[in-house]
Picture (cartoon, rainbow, N blue to C red):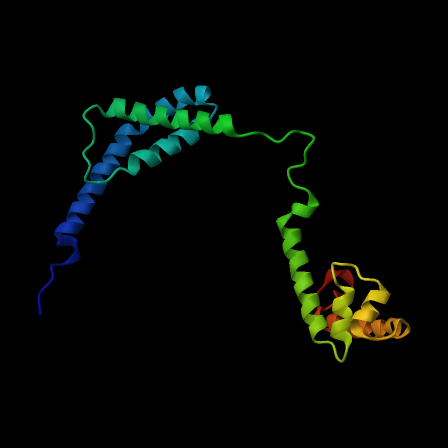
Length: 193
């Protein structure tokens, strides 16, 4: 069985720690320069200085560890911040603000309401499928997006138009009882049972 050196002495770990220490020292050394450059470029870019500074740090720290730092680090930092400022200007030029008259999102496009509508629809369709006898056929026809008339539903189900009304009432009553049992009504004062 080969003996492995302790984790603190492994060469790869030691190299990583040394690189991390160099990076940390470099970050502390470059912090004032990055802040100053971001503050200088932000007004012309139409961006917040903090946003430019953050984008510059991301670019600076994404560099591969094996890649050496350029000789003129200050110039390199300025170039990175200016490149981020140009990118922010291009982005701002493409963005179109909402006009004041236009609502950002109407009630029909609200994701929460859409999810609730979908959930209610799925619950209703599942309950319709569990109703007895001919009720699933009648209720499915009633829920059709084509908005069928009594005559069309009766013809589709092969029954008289006069018997459709009472059957529909019984099926809706059954569906109402099923849904009431599944969804507990809140007590007075808003408490759930």
